[in-house]
Image 1 (cartoon, helix red, strand yellow):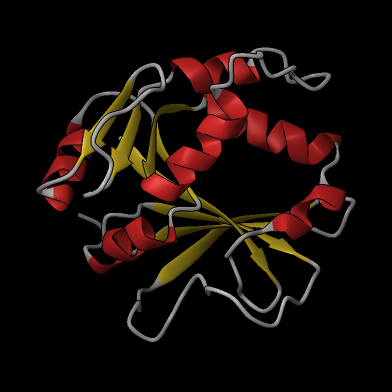
Image 2 (cartoon, one colour):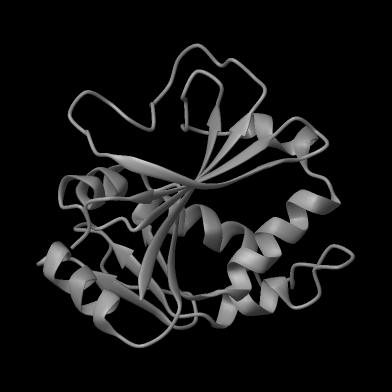
Length: 186
């Protein structure tokens, strides 16, 4: 399987707490996310992202799909979810599994399974580990036309790699989707 990281980032590279994304959703963007989810076979995330996803997607009240997004919430609910955490003791969301030890080895095992994409969203701490060990096959950067100023940046001086642009798409809202492949992969 291919490990694909999708991140919402501001023009100045901030990925932390992207509350600024809401006004930029449109039909084309929703289709992009829909297609991405339905091309994935596994969700991989850190504990904080897992907990954020649970609050939206695993509630007792079913999430209503947006028009044209029928099946999105059900797909997220049923996909296998792997949570990398040393503090989470149990999962409460359907089809969730904890990776608490030998993280790199466990992710390499996931990548060797048959199937399509392993999808990673958010998960800044996990992403640092993935980048340090060249585990990311593809980056999908959704760049928003906002400058945030402060916050956790997607890339820092410790994470250097060579990337090749394979696709770009501009949404009517000004969001740009940039897809890069890593030239260094495990």
